[in-house]
Image 1 (cartoon, rainbow, N blue to C red):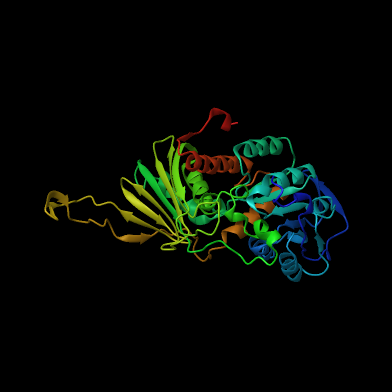
Image 2 (spheres, rainbow, N blue to C red):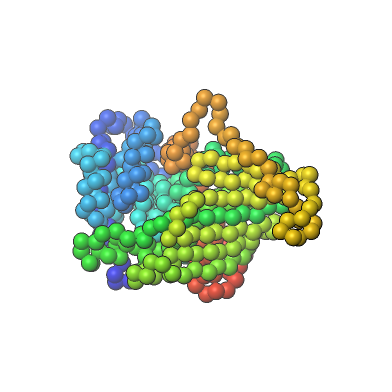
Length: 404
């Protein structure tokens, strides 16, 4: 870690929900001591925009209670303390939070480069871990976490919340049932019109606040945006990429940043499927989108809805723009049909809330969460393959040692 990086031993604290109401009687559970009321006491490390959002969602999960927070930026800490209440503890050193015996589990919502060291320390402190995506910044870090979790008794969950989203469960089901055919490819985009820059009062905090712009702290759009889609394709296909190529550049936001403001990568999977992952920070058209193009139909996935378009089966050959033999009937394919994914009478729930419920249930039931260290490893390595492909302009291949 460079001298300009955050000193992780001084990572500041924020707070949490009050401890009042917890039963004094406790019982051991999978390496931690859990309240007999089955309340999981959570410490949040990193209370910026995402961390504060997670605190809000924890409040909607029965059985989870925030009791401590940590952040190095006073404004972030104050916002969290205001939200969780004065009885919660705040820390300026995340290792002191980990030493707090009243904390059963931690949520790590810090910049990407801090995920691995903080997760390692949390496991050593026998805390259950929910770490935001991606769980690691390098391939070696991903493999290291797998080995550590396998020898621990702690629950380890990665914040790829779409694995807990009913919409993606339904997409996976319809593909397995053959709705779109047996040959398909993916087109994924996650576009924004944003420079990713936040105001900095103290120049010393530039890299702390705007960490997404620096290559030794973050992977840019591929690790921060496309990561969700890379994991979604891994989930849908029950596989991982075998090779990756990519290009990126800084073509619009020429403000001294080091990470790319536009990326385009292509991944190939064992079944021959190809997936493209694109992110542009200077155009937000269609924002988040995944298209799965099969030989029988196409699925288009947005934020919370998905549609299927059947391929034409009765094409008529004619003349289009002077080209004889071109298909003119159903050139834009079949009728747009929404894919239902909710049970009658139910409403869609924010995927992160479902993910946090899975975290709680995994701790209580002593099981592996849906988004776990194994699936997290696969996606972390896939992201690194894309980053390395863009940096070196070479083909990156999945190595046998990645499949530990």
